[in-house]
Length: 104
Image 1 (cartoon, one colour):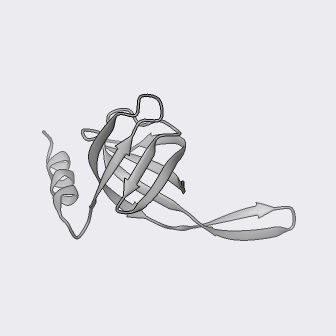
Image 2: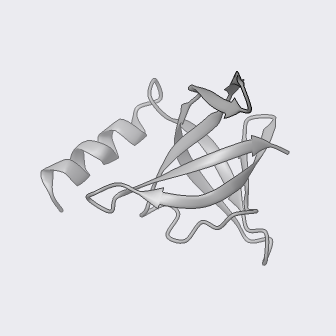
């Protein structure tokens, strides 16, 4: 295990940094507990002559917790449910997935 992987494990274990969540497969209904780090950056979208700012919801998940997420899968964080939209993207070290979510 690399030093970076060890650091990521510690960050995801920290209750101040990461939250408990549940992943539910859209195809098999399999459930798996995971840890997520949430981000909610604003996104600017150009449409014609206008620019619109919208809220987004993204989470980072360890590849070791969730080896193969797919669009349409469900992520439940507390009482809130989100659907993965778009293709999940891994970081350079191939340790972390970034998932773009929309409310379900």
